[in-house]
Each structure stands twice: as C-alpha cells, then as structure tokens.
Length: 417
Image (cartoon, rainbow, N blue to C red):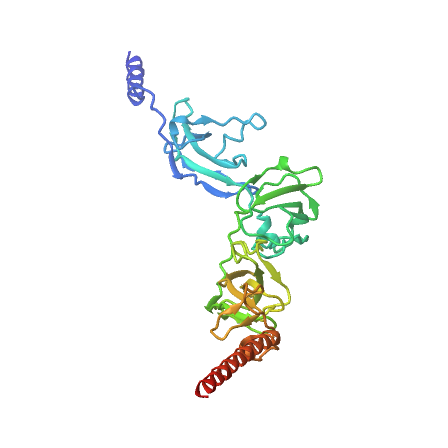
C-alpha cells in the first residue's frame, strides 16, 4: 500500500513539472538589414541579411521581389535552375537594367515544428547600363560652324590596365559637308568594336553620349556595332559688323576726268581683317549682299576694287551707282558684313559757267563745243562760222549807216546852193 502511494505521489510531482501547453517559437531578430545599390551593370551585387533566434530555433530564409516600392506586392523568388539560391541569408539578383525592390522573410522554427517569421526592410537595387561614352573616349570634336568634321579612327580605352576598350573603325557625318554650317543638325555614325582582354565582346551593355542604351543584341558576331547621335542644330556664330563712319558721296564729273569714292570704316573688336568689295549698278536699287552673305545678282562685282576707296570709270557719259560691302572676318574665319549707301556718279560732257552740265545731246539752237580738258571755251563757246556771220552782219549795218549819213549830207549841201 505504501509503495503504491509513493508511486502516485511521484507521478503527481512529475505532472506538475510539465507545462500545461506547448510554447510557441519566438520571432527572429534581424541584426543587420539588407542594403540596396545603384551601380553599373556588369559587376554582381549580393544582398545580405543577418538574424538570430532568441529561443535557439532554426532560421530559414526566403527572398522576395517587386517592381514597386510596396511590400504588399512582393512575390517569392523561385529559381528553377537553383532552388536554394533564394533561400539563403544572401542573394545575388539577376543583372537587369532598371530598379527592382527586394526583401527577405526570416523564419524561426523549433524542434516541435512551431515557427514565427519577420520581413526585412524593402530595399531598391538599380542596375544602370555601362556608360562607355564613345564621344568622350574617342575625344570626338563636336561640330562647330566653320570647322571640318572629325573622322579620326583610333583605339580608345578608359581602363588604366588596358583590359577593355573600343576600336573606332569608321566615323561619318550627315550631311557630308566640307565644313559645318549654321542652321544644320548634323548626325554622326560611328562603327566600333568592343574588346575585353584583347578579345571582341558582343555581350556588352552601354550608352551613347549618355542616351540611347546599347544592348547585347545590337552587336554582331564580331563584336561590332554602328551607333549614331544627332547634335542640336548649329547656331550662327555672332561676329561683329563693321561700322561705316563716312559714306561715299554723290559726284558729278566731266567725261575723262578722275574722281574718287571713299568710305571710312571702323572695325569691330573681334576683327582679324576687313575685306572690301565694290559693286556697280545702273539703277542703284536693292542690296548687293543677302543677309546670308551671298551676292544678290542685282549689282555687278568690281573684282579689281579691293580697297576702301575706288576710282569710278568716267570714259563714257551717263549715270552709274556704286556701293561698298565691308566684310569683317574673325580669327576662326567667321564673317559678318555691312553695306554702304549707293553713291551716284554722273559723267557729263562738260560743265557750263553757271555750273550746269551739258548733256550728250544739245538742245536746238545751241552750239556744241568740245574743248581740251581743263580749257575754258573762248568767244562764248561760238564756232568760227557763227563769228564770221555776225561780223559780216555788223559790217553791213555799218556800211548802211555810213551810206545814209553821206546821202543826208549831200542833200543838205544842195539846199544851200
């Protein structure tokens, strides 16, 4: 009996020591959160999390991802090629250009099968295309008005160890101008080969001039690719205009005499040299130059007049108009111009005493007299025949008067007798 009571007492003590219910697993504690990155594609990046179990349970991991910064949209990462890749404390995301958000669920599991879990922070992982800026690496000269296009081909690299780089195979410009012109948007095409460790690479990412992404599919089997870039429209270079301080004056000159047209010009500060172009016209209407610096065709260029002054042709009578185009050229060959007023040059046969000029055709009743240059016409400009007629007329008048006087005198003598 006593033995039975002792066993019952021991059983009661043992039952009192047992818990009434099984204890739940504690939530794991994250001691190091994963951190995101923003980097060029090509270098792997590893996400890492560190956690502990407060009650000695076993920790397990599952990585999740989403395309937006919202943890409610996450989906478990399943890599069918490696099922355990996303179930470790670390994870290496696939290198895809763009931004993806990641987090990790850490689970604490006890031996009796109970567990609890916690999510890590949601972090952003951004991969950018490799920025091999062909223009910067090649030192391609951007287009500038008046400059020749850069078509240099060379091997270039920005790697100090010369491990990777690019062969520039050809460079072409469109439009294919000898020099760049204002108001034109030029496109450059570059044919290049990407190499790494002396071998061509066709699985390279990149950008052209910080824009258009280059994908592996853009390369051919030899690792070559043709890329293009269009520059903004070139703006005209602002070159100073020459200032005409004294315009050419109208002039009237006798045929065969010399006269000079003169213009005074002040050069702008950016001037390397001034170019003078004289033009002539029968009407004096319109401009000699367009605003773009081309001849209008309304005026005739005088190719032998290249100074600020010129001697008009006075061999023939008539009226001719002259004007000067002054071109300023800076040190880079850029130009701007100014036109003078149209100066009227009248060439006449002679000048009268009263200052009026005789035209090439004389009016009825006028005598036309030609004298040597510089001489003053004698006898009022009359011809010898005219002078003879006048003299004979005067003589006849004098003889008639004398005869009349003699007749009157004779008549008076007869009366006295």
